[in-house]
Length: 138
Image 1: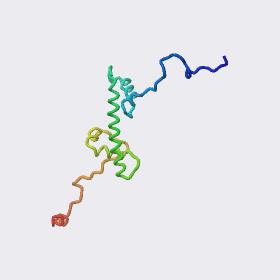
Image 2: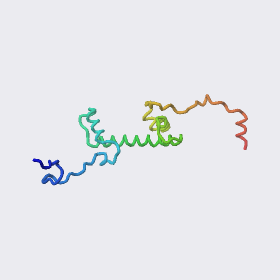
Image 3: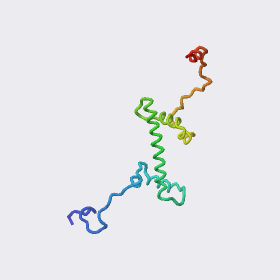
Image 4: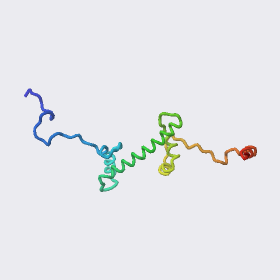
């Protein structure tokens, strides 16, 4: 009885052959977002009594696309402001300057995001007559 205890690994006989590495559904779908977790949230949320196998894959793909789109635009806004990190202000600028994202996230308030710089045309100083005549001369 003083011998080594078998741990399940080694030269075991029988069984169904070698264990294969499990592949996650996110890897199968080619996504970064967690398909299994989204499926679990859909099931636990009681949104429906029946759910197809493709529903969490589709939802994960849509969410990943939206995040990639927002991050790309926010990264461009950060680069325009000569910053290397994205802050909430950059996300706000990205969302408000994009027509489709602004329609999707129109009622969303981003904390520490601020507002778009905008001055109404009525409040701007009027151009004098000299400026108008100078620009008309050729």
